[in-house]
Image (tube, rainbow, N blue to C red; front, side):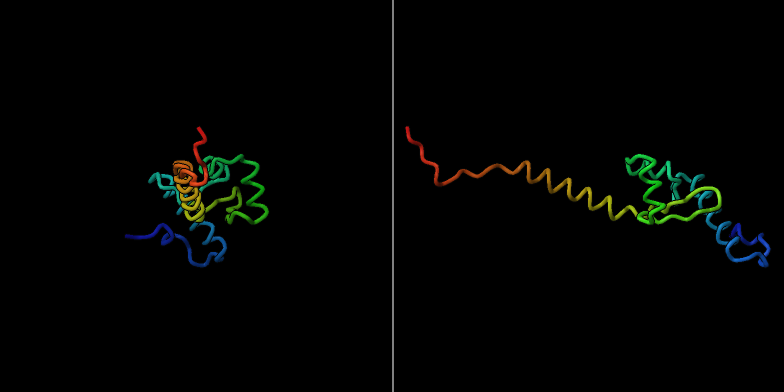
Length: 111
């Protein structure tokens, strides 16, 4: 199977090839409904955060992103570990809340 990059002239600068490669990955993933790269707006929905906060995190470097000349593209895989840890914490909190309080041995019935 040939790559979409096979039709590109190899004399192009590497930066252009990298940007084209990222664009091909992004557009290919959009067609298959498995988003490898997300826009800032899509990332905000995915993380349930305000758009301006995600944009600020990208500009601060707290979220890694690639700028394709038009928009920032964010790799979705970088959030998997964070989301797994959040789910684990939710599970532990639910477990803690559902644990019954043991009877205190020092409490005596005075009646």
